[in-house]
Amino acid sequence: MKQRIKSANINLRDEIATIINKLNEDSNTLITVTSVNVSNDLKHMKVKISVMPEKKLVKTLKFLQKNVFAISDELSKKVKMKYIPKIKFILDKGYSNFVQVQDIISKLNEK
Image (tube, rainbow, N blue to C red; front, side):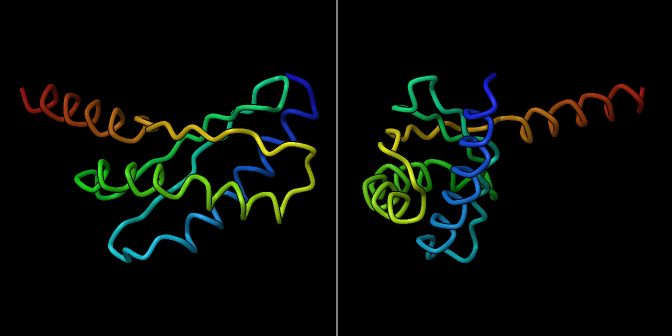
């Protein structure tokens, strides 16, 4: 991956996380931006998020989709880019997969 894209991914991840935390009014929901992957042409990006508690996942994804233009607008004020990439939010299942594996290991160790 080009250094320019890596740098953009890191900067965009940090800025988007800050913006989402400002917009999030539900103090009982933790939204974490785990990674950002910008396309090579810098026109699209996939933003991976994790949500705690997981039961608020659907509500949170709807909230983010509803506010995607506000997030993009705020991002354009904070980041110096010719174009702000189009945002697509994706669920990062890493933590839930980790919990499932831990449960399986615990059950196997009990036998």
